[in-house]
Amino acid sequence: MIEIRNVSKRYAKGNLAVNNISFDVPSGEIFGFLGPNGAGKTTTIKMIVGLLEQNQGHILVNGIDTLEEPLKVKEQIAYVPDNPVLYERLRGTEYLAFVADMFRMAPEVRDAKINEYATMFNLRNDLQDMIGTYSHGMQQKLALIAALIHEPDVFILDEPMVGLDPKSSFSLKEHMRARCEEGKTVFFSTHVLDVAERICDRIAIINKGKIIAIGTMDELRENHEGTLEKMFLELTQ
Ligand SMILES: Nc1ncnc2c1ncn2[C@@H]1O[C@H](COP(=O)(O)OP(=O)(O)OP(=O)(O)O)[C@@H](O)[C@H]1O
Ligand SMILES: [Mg+2]
Image: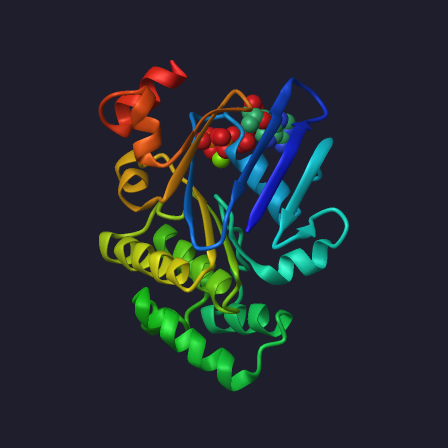
């Protein structure tokens, strides 16, 4: 569960990137976070995962305040950034072992998980190679595996489908759905509106730092006709 209460963020220069937003993402839900470029999605996500501090308001992850107990929050979450920066001179296996060790995973559990996720994303044959030789999509898959490996409770993914081939993107969506059915929480940003429309239980649209629409697809349709794309274009023009 993620609770966002009256959160604002202003960067050193400029206007409010996030302007007094409040909403909850309950457990068991896939929540899609949509909005035009520069709307405030990544800023919000970085505050949830503890990479940025808000100027105002509170964020709770499973009841834990991100500013009060940042490490405890990090233990609960998987985070995939919009542009994962990986260690180019490590092999895929070395990077995953490093991440798993940070989460204090037992080596046999770690190896089983690496195997499971590398198979899911079709990356097993590449894990012995240096990360610097990976394609964009392969790096994205490695970042996803590194985030999923410790079986967290809350998944925070910033445009996770970008760069993934159709099969990997499908596997990720199936995985997200299965984790939600176990009562976990998935929060992800995307520009792919038909994916959001199909897989999200609820959606929020942020524009210029403010939440301008939130609800299930049915709830959003009460005020706007047509597809999510049409609704999005109308609301954000
Ligand atoms: N490090 C930064 N310093 C100053 N301003 C920033 C910084 N990062 C983002 N901003 C500003 O904050 C606003 C929100 O940016 P943010 O990255 O959150 O948007 P976004 O919704 O993730 O966009 P996109 O869809 O392009 O990823 C923008 O006006 C942007 O210029
Ligand atoms: Mg962004």
